[in-house]
Every structure is written in structure tokens, then in C-alpha cells.
Image 1: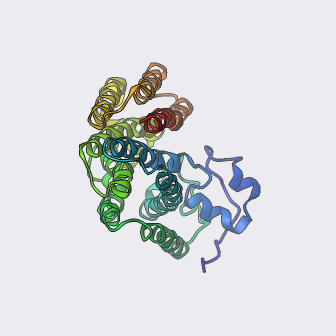
Image 2 (image 1 turned 90 degrees about the vertical axis):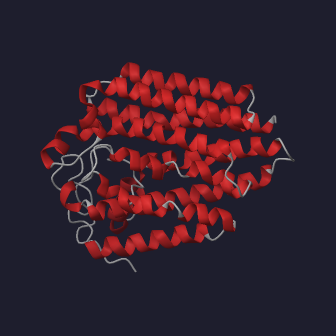
Length: 318
């Protein structure tokens, strides 16, 4: 049982006010749901999308040698969605446990449940354990090979929240962890990791580093005061150029994954629109406008889903 929060109703982060958690969830559960970022599902979407990309691309690879397992892919897609919500929530909870002192000194995060005193440390640890159990239940449904692939990512998940203390681009570790799903579709459908899997993974990693750099510009000034590191601080006024390089390399790597998988015009069309969407982010970027940075960051969900549609249609016509 999760210990009762000391103050179930309290300050709400400005970028999550008015969401379904505040409108519909029972008051005692709201701090825990905020701890898991259930009030901001964008993170779950961004964790899930590479999983779905890999399922669609694995179907395309599968079509080269045998009949694609479309029905199985749908089942795995649903299971991945459940796992993404559970593990993203667990990751956010773990992050907030480690960063509870830093969060209290940053304007955007000081209203999070732990620094605001709405959840005790014991309560957060129990809640973390419950989410990990949910993730374990999903993990045990996977083929043995895929279980091994999934477990290989746990080290990255554990150390990521600490990276802002020791390296200037902690977003790289986030990208390595958050993009792991780009391998999982191949792991469950093919029980192997062919070249397209690694190319897709590499492209997804750079995409994550790019969009999380935009997100990090919201906290740039506070991070400098607190003494933590980020790519937003490192790139500074040259962020647009760095992002162009990161996004450009991501598109090239994903394109190489399509070539390696033998993808057709629908997949290339999806990648083309995905590229236009990323270019539009760079065109609009103003690193001093926090609200715009948040909107551009969130727009990556739509960009990723557009690419997904192209990959899925291409797999269906394979």
C-alpha cells in the first residue's frame, strides 16, 4: 500500500495545470500521478514511438523472407504501450527521488510532489516499486531473446538522472535509454537484431538528444545557478546549428535503416514529412522563449507519429 501523501492537494507545475489528473483523479492519488508524469503523457508517447517504429520496420524486413506477422505486431504494439507508460512513470519517479533537492531550487520543478512535500520519500519508493512490478509483468510476456535485450537497458535508466552532474550532454544518455524501443520490435518479431535495428536506434538517439536539448532550454538559467550540466548550456546561442546537425544526422541514419530494410515509397514519404517537421522546429526556435520551447518539444510526438504512419503503410503494402 502506498503511504498517504502529507499534502494531496498542493501546487501544480505550470506546464501541467488543468489536465485530466487535476480534473478527475481522486485527490490522494494526484501527487503520485504527477510523480509518474501521468499529467504530461508526452514522455510516454516519445518513449513508445521508437518501439512502434521498430515493429513496423521489422515487419518490412520480415516481408522479405516470409509472410509478415501483422496480428502479432498489433499485440506487441499494445503491450509496448502498457510497458512505456509503466517504465516512463518509473523513470520519472526515480529521477525525482534523486533530484528532489535540485528540483526544489529550480523554478519549473519546485512544485513537483517531492520538493513540494506532497509525497514522502518512502511513498515515492513504494510507488516506484509498484511501477517496476508492472513493467516486470510486461517484460515476462516477451520472448526470451527480447527479455535479454530489454534488460540490457536498465543500467542506462538507472544512471541517467545522475549524468547532469558529471557530463555536459546528459541528453545523450537519455537518448541511449529512451530509444531502446527501436531495438525491441525486431527483438520480439524476429528474435534478432539485424542492421536496420541498429541504424534506426542510432537515428532515434540523435532525435532524442535534439528534442531534449530544446526542452532543456526552459531550465537553462536555473541549471547554471544550481550547477548542473545540459546540452542547452553547452550549445548556448549556437543551439540551432547543433540541432540542425543532430536532426540531420538522425534523418540520414533513419534513411539508412529504410534502405537496409528494403523500404518502399510510403516509408520514404513518412521520413520526408518527418524531416520537414524537424526543419520547421529549427525555423521557429527561440531559445529564450520557454513556452515556445515546450511547444516545439511536444511537437515531436506528431513528427514521430507521421513517420510511423509511413512505416506502417509501407509494411502493409510489402
